[in-house]
Length: 445
Image (cartoon, rainbow, N blue to C red; front, side, top):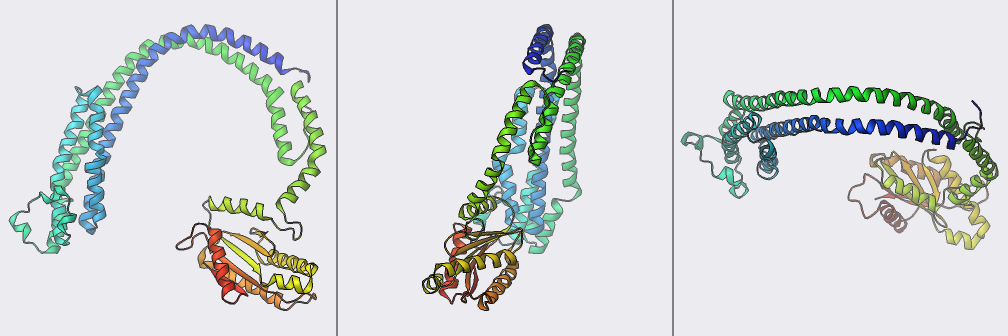
């Protein structure tokens, strides 16, 4: 195969071949579509009916679960969930309503309706059990649902002690009679699904008999199309896919493109290689300058804001530390700006060596620094205190001729209690508190 084959030539032949095969298959597929629609309709009906049956079963199981939890724990939340499902969500009733329109005269619908009726009848037992628990726990009647208020306890049950009432309520929703009713509901749902499966298989069989002949007719066209497609794929793999894979690997490794593939891709490789060689060093320099502070070589404020936004919108825990050099303006005024710049560089160096390599150390203002510590939780705040104390200890005993300075810091964690409008403002609030109460240390929000 020659290296100068053009994609335009391959594309023209592919279009012509595909058009011929498409015309031949179109006539067959139009007829096959009509037959297939019958098969698809039968399958969709089965799915609809099965979903409805399972929805009813799920709704009934959910009511049982909530009433059992309520009779066991006495927590009103379970009763509220019970009535939310029974009166608001109404998943059982909606399941039957969804089936009634297209399948109202089928055995499947009648089985599902019987399951719903039995489930509703079982609710009388559940209301009675909830009434026993409510009276046993002395819950105000204003909190009772209307259905429970309508329940009248039998004479002997009304005089039972609280513990006995709750015990009887638990027994009512777990004894043999209750479980037998649950089994009857499940059997009705199973019968519904069985009826649906039998009817669907019959409809599918009829549709498949008609569809089989058309399918065989399509086989010849598909085999021919497959052979043609294989040939085109081989050409495309040789001319396009392999070169593009090589280009992707070169991009990942930061290398120039090899001269391979179709003529158009070879021309692309020539152009890319020229641009790559001309701009590689310039792009690296521009990117570094855009993200780093020129004095300290730390990340600048723009990079800090992007990192902070990334972690604020993510799921990982982190902490943000805002740091000020105490009375830095006085140092500048007294010793001059060169000395002030030297102090800033020293602080940047100490921050970089003290904190972890995975943390983000930034200079976000004149004498203001910030650290984004990843994978940090509020129970580890002592580690931050130790790091900042170590830095302040070093700054208090300079051996490089620079004046003594100290750092004040405010810290906020992503898992903090009572968070403010933003973690940055919370850390700034903590910093203000530290500066107001003596500087030289850190405060936590």
